Amino acid sequence: MADFADSLVATPHGDARVHVARPADGPRGLLMLGHGAGGGVTAHDLQLAAEEGLGAGLAVALVEQPYRVAGRRAPAPPAQVDAAWRAVAEHLHVAELAELPLIVGGRSFGGRVACRTSADVGAAGVLCLAFPLHPPGRPEKSRLSELTAVTVPALVVQGERDPFGVPDASSLPSGITLVVVSGDHSLKKDAPAIRAAITSWLAALIPGM
Image (cartoon, rainbow, N blue to C red; front, side):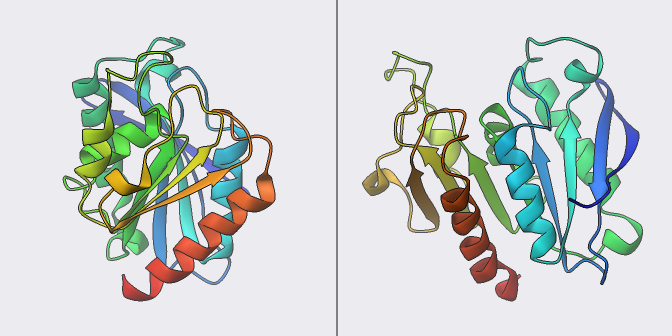
């Protein structure tokens, strides 16, 4: 795994912590990933995505939301986490990364944030790992609209036994690719399938960015 440089980034709701790694030959794009609601950027699937992003020639930024930097596990309200995410995206899109295409995404809660703000940050693609379609046991509380509102190509990698639900492929716009893998919401079981899905999607996305 590449070395990540850490820094604090001021946002309207406190400092976010950003871990950035760049490929040796210079980046051809930027992949910005957020964590789950109570988790961190060391989550197994986020690390897989970071490795595949770097392998595809992208700079990778793993973003810790201000509430996590402050030591809280309970997420801040959507308006706050979305504003913090937009601030980090603006901060990252400078210097040698200024003109590069931006792919956003994240694990679970982080994927929701990326979906809601994809248009605001000018994203070229969205990567969702274990998108939480609804609270466990509450399918009537669907968050599908956050996913289907995305207007750029998106990849959703979902565990087949995810208690947060698995999207119905027929309900998704043509620009959203759904890959269902073995396992549950943790996405810890089938690393080769997760890697293959991300690699294939990036290979198709990057040439058109």
